Length: 360
Image (tube, rainbow, N blue to C red; front, side, top):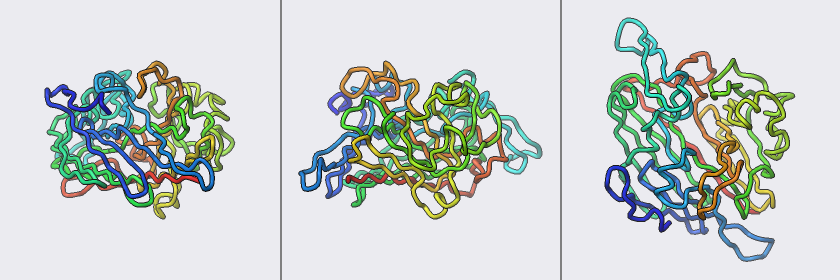
């Protein structure tokens, strides 16, 4: 972490790191710039009876300078709206507007004419304030002013990360607003559970989803939800990430997986595993549990050439992201079968995601 310590951010103040740990050897590091999850070292047993060693499971930049240059959103807490909003605009419906008719809102755009992860200066490119820092928990807070990146309302946000005894990291996101606006917060960690971070294609992945959302080349939803049955998007039973990679046109449009998966009711309401990822050597497992309705599965299709933790460039598919969130472009699709993505004055946005690591 030497490349991040005491480095000056664009606000001309040094970045601050917070280290979390538990009694079982889990160690995680967070940074206040972007409320970023920089590192997660998980204890792993080589074989029954053998002593433990730790395995780094996150991708990151080698230093803060490269972190500012990269566009992969390594470990960042993203918002106001994670994922994409088509053409950077949405209709604020009459029922949530402060006017007597619907009102179109124009946001700042930063990807092919669309708004990605909150815009060019979204929450990933912002200084968060450290509210609490303990051995096992860090709480970040942020005030996003009315009009920030075009979004209406003053938004107060809290993001907390906690290391608990079962080798889980719990991410909790809270927000309130004084004007109706869409809110969709998540962490954009890239995982690779292998000893080396060459590729995630031999990782085993299961996703508790019966439907996925086809997209255009821009990543914007093309049509309604589609059953995963009989497609390369069927991860209801575990399979390797690479088995059906680029097997159909819905993947080839975005060079792999970069799609929203609507989680089953059981996965969300019973808080059972939404996704399970297992390393190729089967020594390390990650279970993701969330009360968010969807996961965005991104197979690292454009990571090639991005400087990695040791300074050498990552290859394509060096890591994958499993982002708990609302479906992409949900503000423009009230028909998506999940809670409204609009937060109203007087209401609270409150969701959590658990990243549970276990070693065999």
